[in-house]
Length: 123
Image (cartoon, rainbow, N blue to C red; front, top):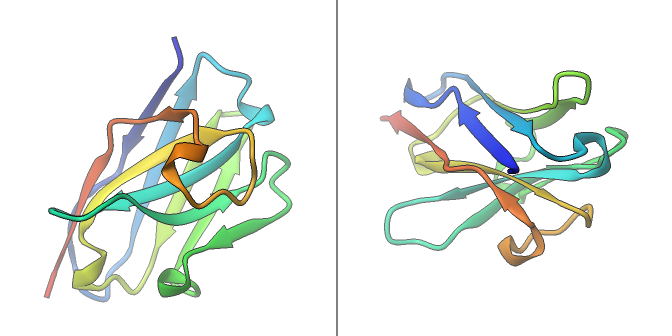
């Protein structure tokens, strides 16, 4: 079965940094675009960033542009989300996802999802 397992979440001080990881298995990782989404309590799932299967382009949510960076290591079948200058409004459960369409910003455009990792940013 396809599995995406996020890790790296936790409590972070505002202005601090955190790197999330998502380890994939059960799929040809290099053939999939990868994305990160987040969901705050009581809110819908929000697109954060995406990286092409060939690792040559990325796309980010405007509110995280310049602060967050998505990357991937196909050899390790892992996608990362480097988060810098964190703000309290970044607090959410962060999910990684795999899909066949690069640049997709809607959750329904991704086929596989992890269970999420909680990131809490204190003020």
